[in-house]
Image 1 (cartoon, rainbow, N blue to C red):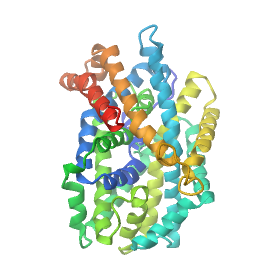
Image 2: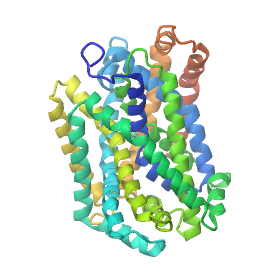
Image 3: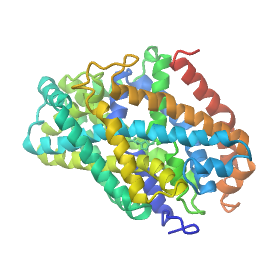
Image 4: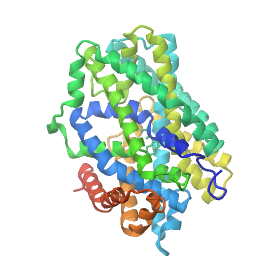
Length: 452
Ligand code: TRP
């Protein structure tokens, strides 16, 4: 317990780990490689890096600070911080509520595939370097309605139980233990992948940009990924910030999380792309890319089955930290704002996601022909959240902090009442939040959606 009886992170290091636990997840291991592969490689990576540093980092600082200043859930925080009468700001929190459910609906399905791959790894079913065989195994899993749904429900069950136990016991305990091991295994994968013959092609794909491939839609996808990766734009960082201690150094925490998160993504990229070219996989395969390539790298090394099993177990655990942080947004709103019992709030949220998750789970099987705006439900949820709601939430958070809250509050709060000498940093961040980020996001959003 911290801060006037509210549950919270008990140490500054614990808060850093939980925030990292939220950021690092399937976004690094699944989404980043898939999107990089299907959007042309290095050029996409360059735009993604720029978006992360110039927009992601400042928004992360702003969002976390709002939560710590208000010490409330994503909706109530805006009630507390907005000037009297400006009730509409809390719409940001409600948008976050909706985005959390949309993201969870497809994210829990991908986590389900990871759980399933733990077992397929043990049975040897996925021990193949042949792209055709790998595609059949993956295709069978995602096309089968029963297994798609059951694995999703297993994921929801596991995370629902953890979230019901509360912030410090649940999230902190899980986040503390897992990251370093995953990092080491990714390093092992990188070494193996880089030693395959033809590995250099993968490196060139990842690091030698061809800017001709960058369209407005690609830029929007890179920006959406930057938000998705750092869990921004929908109240996760705000809610976590509300559990931070008063003496937590927010800019330093945010910068560390960003750097660590980027390194995990890059390692995943270096583990995957050399192997993609060495074994003849298709870099633009999309969501299936990782599930075919990673087993191939493990299969080609001694002790592969053991390493592969451990890898999928760790990825499953990494996804838990991210899912917990997604669930925390609606659970905090229901339990703190509406005084719902925390366990009931967790159960309600999980139940809603289980219903919304069905169309996402069935997208590659029973509902493969259901298309809305040209997307199947899985892709639609992904597009709507990452490419629309998160950037929109980001613009609104920037406008709120930059133009409504003003500089004085952030300057005091981010310097911990003057005890941190970081004035220049704060002013730079504030400038980015006030002018650069909202304009950049707006242009990218309007262009990317072809509204402009
Ligand atoms: N950042 C996580 C990942 O990359 C996913 C995630 C957790 C998220 N919380 C979020 C994405 C909030 C957007 C918003 O796997």
